[in-house]
Image (cartoon, rainbow, N blue to C red; front, side):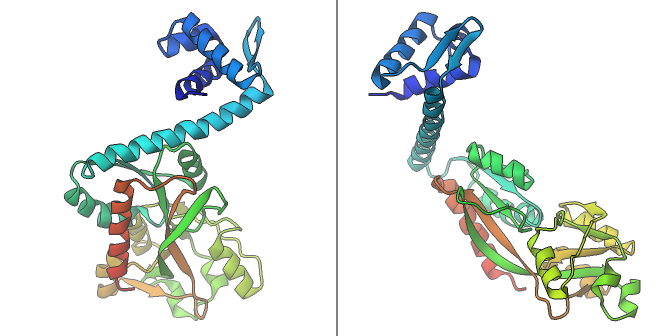
Length: 304
């Protein structure tokens, strides 16, 4: 029967390219590593490497076994993680990725409450663009991504869970020239756009706007920044306009004072989904379940 130790040894040989280098890296003698590899090849009934002058060359079947073994070892790692936390639910670690549209919400609203409720759970939060987040999730280096800009491409490797669908509005300063005329998308595009995410032609917002106005809309933000407070200051002091979820906690004072004006896209209703994105074949850790429960509770109680 194949053992986890043998799979770990196989990974090391493939990574380092030679028995001696692999043995040194995993603190094993060369003879012991050679014996482990020989036993694995006997179990499988096939040679896994071609011995060449420049090192160990994996066969095609070896690469297949390597790909499968990575899945097994990652699954075992998840089981150990869950077991450790089941023994002490109040401890553990959590790695959260946040995308545009969700950073300020998580950092300002949910994280402080979670840290107070579970002081012994270690939390690391990092911003990540969609492609970077995808790679980190696939490598199981993060528990989940919380995103609010709709830019993560859906596929079967991941599950998507909507926490809250939030209307998207336009924000401008009180004396912006656009307020002197009827709101027109084309004239609005003549002013600088600042936003929390880059709008590619495939972005859900752009596709919906293009369909509505029966034309290809090209939107090129002048500034892309995930900090809504910084974007707000830019809008207050320039002719820039901002597209943002209708979460007035970041702008309620300026809206109440009349310094900022919010507008809809006419009869076109745009919404952004605050969503969690996770590996489809990975279970949530107890810490992840608790954090996301707090996220749902927070969004269930806000008024839009």
